[in-house]
Length: 127
Image (tube, rainbow, N blue to C red; front, side, top):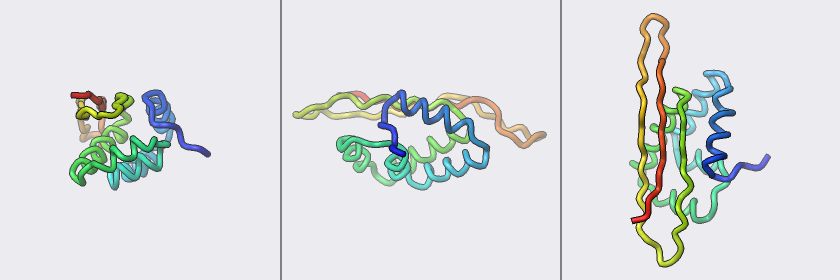
């Protein structure tokens, strides 16, 4: 089965399908994301050469940051919005990536569950 391209619509479809799975399957996916975001992204989506080159520039700190951010959002079955990177032909301009996290997740001590919402939005901006 071929992997979908990394587009906003395919990310939305991926999360919709993922969130239909059991909690145990969600945890496995979250662990894979947290272990190595770059590898998970490459294994989950068909990336363009430019996208691969871009994520290969992530430091280990950035890779872990995105891994944990996405893993937490997946566990909470939150919304992930991943905008398409802007077209940046030669000569290239500086690209800035922004991650916005919104939500309120609470732990219910009586039933031992997380409730609430979490949304992560990835945006790209050329400077």
